[in-house]
Every structure is written in structure tokens, then in C-alpha cells.
Amino acid sequence: MRRGGALPLAIRENKWFFVPFGLFLIVGAYLLSVLNTGDAIFFFSAHRSYWGDLFFRYFTKMGEAPAFLLVLGILLFVSFRHVAALPLLGFSVGLLSFLSKELFSHDRPYLFFRKMGIFDQINTVEGIVLNGGNNSFPSGHTMSAFALYAFLALCLSRKSVVGLALFLAALLVGVSRVYLVQHFFKDVYLGAFLGVLAALAIYYLQYRMDAPWMGRRLYFDWKGKPKVVQQAYRDVP
Image 1 (spheres, rainbow, N blue to C red):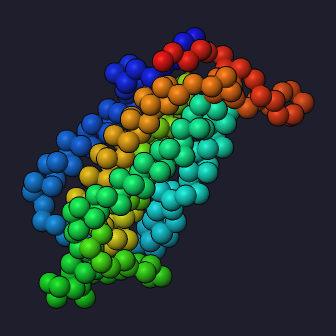
Image 2: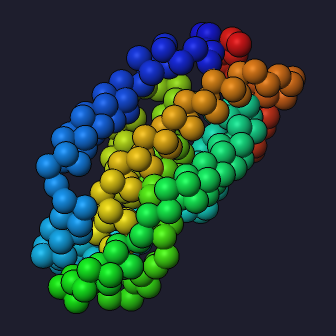
């Protein structure tokens, strides 16, 4: 079996992730054209529940550093090449998030609604500290989640509904940022787009790197002992 870094083929093979993502971009663009800036936040504010608050409070962490460590552990069993590329992905997302936030300098929802004098109309989630400042656009959590789970989908050899599950995980991280009143929908939309672009770029660039150990992976034998073995396929640059 041969694998490589050709992006058009990689995208076609991962239709379970990229078809829903494409639909998200289309539907999201429409929503941005018809909704006001804070409409999504007011929607969730009016439809809060105990279980929703509990779920999104913790699921938002799937766009943070522990999620990268979890994916790193998975990729050890896929290819050391992907493991080597993951820190580069994390650095790229962090840098891209910082630079774009500095460039756009949009107010966070807390500051935005305070300036409008209507923040008291919003029901917030108990125990969540709201970020202020002008670093709202785009959402860093959403960018991290879409970059991480798109990259994982690209790297996994089995192209199936796992890709859909990874897309939904990334999407729910984005939804959590609006639900928790940390970001607007426009922040989530751009964060998702930039995150997937970062994943595609690093996926392609990892095949420009070469070292003998990159074609290996971790494996447990029938006795449960870990071994380093050669991949079942050959990387194609």
C-alpha cells in the first residue's frame, strides 16, 4: 500500500470529513449573511440547560493542549512521521491565531455587549470566567480543534465514519465557544477555515521531511509488549 502527501487525493479519500466541512462553510456563510453579530449567542442564552452547560464546559477543552497529547498518542501507532509533524502543527496554529487576532483586533462578546449596554440580557454559564479584551477574531480553540482533527483524519489509514466523528468533535468545540459566550459565530467560522488550511499545509509539508525512523510506528505484539516496526506502506513524497 502506498501513501503520500498529494492534497487533492488526500481530500478525496477523506470525504467523511471534508464533505461535512464544505457544507459547514456554505451554511455558515449564509448564516453570517443573514444574522447579526450576537444572534447566535442570544440563541444559546435563551436555550440553556443543565446538561448543555455541563457538556460544553468540558468539551471545549478538546481544543486545548491535552487534546494534542491524546492525538499524539494515537499517531504513535500510525507513523512517527505524523508524530514529528504534530508539534509543527501546534506551533503553526498558535502563531496563526496570535497574528490574526492582533491583525483584526475584534472585541470579545463580553466587551462588545458591555459597550452596547446589553450584557445583562445574556444568561451566562455558571463558573465560566469570560474573556475580555479585543482578541476575539478568530477563535483559537476552534482553529486548534479543526487543525488537530482534520490532521488526524488525514493521517489515519482507515477512511470511514471516523472522519465524520472527528469533524463533529471539531464542530462541537466551535459551538462551545459561542455557547460559553467566549466568541461570536464569525470567530468560529474563520477559526475553522484557518485550522483546516493549517492541517492541509502541515500534512503536505511532512512529506518533504525525511529520516529513516519516520517510516516506523509503535506496535504491541500478542504478548502486549511494545515494539517499533516498519509501516505497512511506503511514504511517497
